[in-house]
Amino acid sequence: MAYGVKTIAVRVKIYTDEYVVTGLLHTRPGGYKERVSDILNDPTARFVVVTEATFRSVSLPSATAKRCDSLVVRVDDIKLLVPFDKESEARPAGEVVEPQSW
Image 1 (cartoon, rainbow, N blue to C red):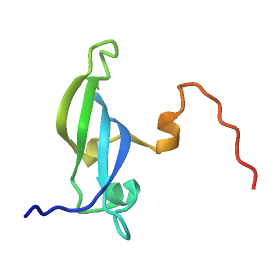
Image 2: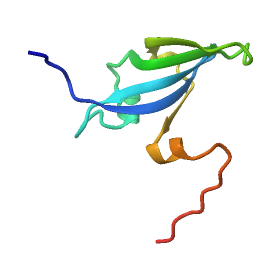
Image 3: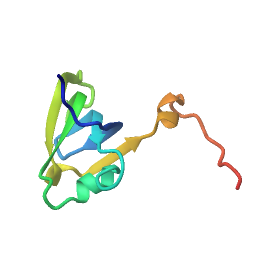
C-alpha cells in the first residue's frame, strides 16, 4: 500500500545570488502552509524542495539550463520567489491582460 502526503504543486521561479531555479514547489492543501509565503515565513523551514527543476547560473544567462528531478534550496539564499498560477502560465509571454471589472 502506498502512502503519501497530498500536495498542491505551484510552479515557481526562484532567484538566488548565484542561480535562477524554476520548477514545482509543493504546498499542503487546507490551512497552514497552503500558500508559498507560509512555507517561506515558517521559522523552522530551512530548505525547500523544488521538483521538476531547472537551474542556471545568474552570471552566465546564455548558458544551457540544467535539469533535475528535485533540487533543495536553502530558504535564506532565496532573494526572490515568483509563483505562477495556471492562467498566467498559459498566456503567451508579453501578452497584456486587461483587468477584470468588479
